[in-house]
Image (cartoon, rainbow, N blue to C red; front, side, top):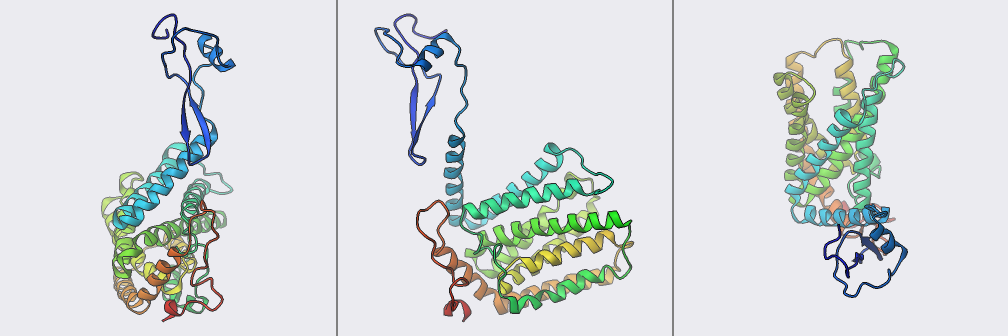
Length: 345
């Protein structure tokens, strides 16, 4: 029943969304209007008859609201890099769990046993890509570039370590092996563009050493989900958190040195694949040696290339507005024909 009784009408209260340049109606607001009178529109007549119901906002409302939220979130991340990195990490894990445990049904057909895992990682990678695009960070985050090709060799030691886990051979049928390879390459894509791309770019204002340490802690800690949600034993999870953290630390140094996440995508995918498909675990002494090497190599990479890589990202982001602006983005140091002398110094 409409409050106010006779002599009052239910009319629309309008809210102006200036950012999107349109007006949306919010039905259901009751405003006193003395004298009754005739309805001003067909919608008012429908509302009085109770036939209009609750009208969903147009799609552009959701889009405009999302644009505003994303722009504000970007500003918050820039002002508070550490908290922003924590928020981005939490959001990524929440999205991963939402699709893996709630939205998608178990998908493991005989012709592709890892279909579910592949879809989850592809969806999460697409989500990170959209955030980077919305914020204008695709290139500065080293995700949409190949970087310094003459330095790709710096990832060779990590690739050799990954291949060492295949010395004992591979376990499983051809279908299982191929399915696992494709799925784990998608894991590499997803985790590298999220961690070494988005999160590391958020932490970049803290400097290369702190950014790499932040990436290592967040990436390693995130693997606690394997114990909390996927049933892995606690001792195995703690070891994985340590190894993943040091792996992430070294990859953070490689990202600064190379200027691209794609060599680490390959290393990451193959490292996971060979360890999972290996018929047995590597000796403890070898795994301990790998951890020591990763820590030392990461420190060397950051001391040698960290300042250059962090400066390139900082300079490029200052000259790259988000896609929402009407201005053409200025070329980043890596996009300029001759490069940038300060970035190469």
